[in-house]
Image: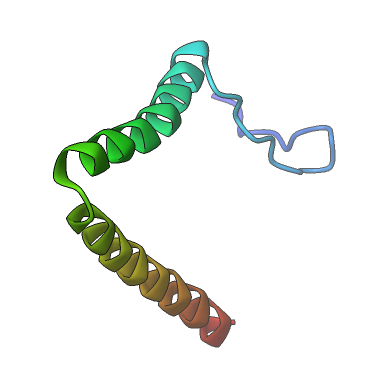
Length: 74
């Protein structure tokens, strides 16, 4: 068995491309999320915007903490 060889392009890793199914799933997910929020807002009224705001606030704080931990680690 021969040892693994280094790639000829200088060792730069290539990003794997998304398959058609992955692209379709991503597109469906991105389009169905806002449609679902709009539908729930129509059904529930203003309460959903409070819940959505809290979710976005928590996600924003988690994103900021993740970014800051990455900065401290380097």
